[in-house]
Image (tube, rainbow, N blue to C red; front, side, top):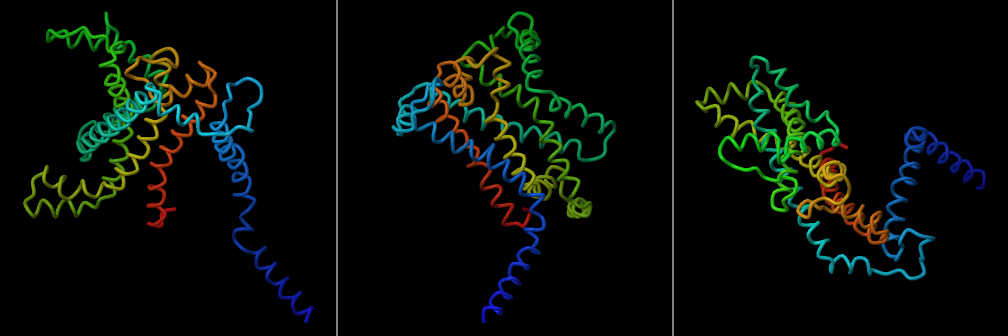
Length: 306
């Protein structure tokens, strides 16, 4: 009886050791442990820190945990302004980038002369770092000799202090980011367009559809997966626009109209030594990012793509 039970247990153990998950553990276990320690443990510690009154000096006091930092967020006018600016940046940047990228992709969809050169030119800004882009647009937006003010001056307008006016600064930031990332969305759309069989184009033409109607009714609806993928990436880029704003305004104190959650988080943590309050803002950014990417990953999982 005992020998039979022991044999069965050994057989179960042998099957478990021979399973794919155990055999592949040398490949997935080390990164899993590293991710768990450096990412998920850090997120958990950040959550715990946000419940304290830690100011960056000494050790955090975990004996008096509470939601006072989150209540302070609700009463902070600067927090509401940063949240509003974040959503305006997120929506404006994402929507305009998707539209511009789609138009560029549709223009380059058919083989035209110098199409490869145009693709390279449109994609080139995406290869630049945020720091380079910020310095470039600081020069472009210069009040005295910037090209933007010189151009609109031909029509009797300006000059405008694009990066100094609270009413104009966020629009100027969005325009600069769209310039950098529209080439990325163009490539995403072009890859999706190349996967559409030529038979569908020919069938639409046989049915008498014009070029505009063919793209609007037949081609564009098939780009929805590419659009969703690009949207998720752009939203995450918008939430992490701190380095662009930091380089544009020489620090984490941008103009009032361009202060977003990321810059406020760094300013509260390092500028005012309110580490616990900064941790609560960081957790809010994490929840926003998770709210964007989790539905996308779940949808990909349901489709069998993960």
